[in-house]
Image (cartoon, rainbow, N blue to C red; front, top):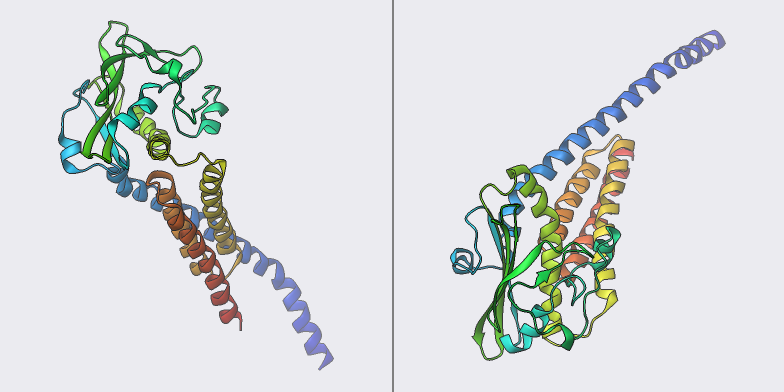
Length: 310
């Protein structure tokens, strides 16, 4: 009996390196499979969401309508309804630009790149006299665009040109009143056909969507008289980071657990949520609900793993 037990123990000891090796390979395979699935979902998800963020908030008529300064190449149109008249919105638009009223977007993010942007929280009288030919600066000392159209309470647009003076990029803001108390704010960006390679334009549209959707929301809040709040931006950042953290945690659990598919499913859901938070600018309550859904998914995946072990 003792001899048999000793032989069994010896066999287990000899087998343990092999078992450990197989477990290690299993984790590596899970990691590679999870990474492949994540990248696939990320690419396909962006391709699916791209047509929406390129025309975020805009109607078919607004997308199709001509706007001053339109160029004949690629373009995108975004819009928002503001509970205010054009006369109430215009002062916020006419002071747009670095060194003026700012870009009304994520100043902290722009300033990480040294743009020195400070979005105004009030109407600035000293920046209400914009005229055709005036520069619009992207950053301190980077003023590559000039105003080409200005029609108070209706149109404001600027363009950048190439070395030959031909327009290559156009940015136009339009105000379309719905009734005395509601106005559509429409923003149109367009490029000349040979402005940039298609791949570069796709790369540009990604950060552009993030910053532009925030700008539309900020102008809406300013014109409607909402009090500026740093906590609003903090919540947006925290909601995004929470989804990212849930995704990373789900990925680690998928690698560590033998029952890994539930955790992988939560990780895939986190990628989809991150795409939505980044490019569709959902309302705050929906951001919170999506994050809570991911947390619930992590709990569910843990319960599934425990039930299998049990």
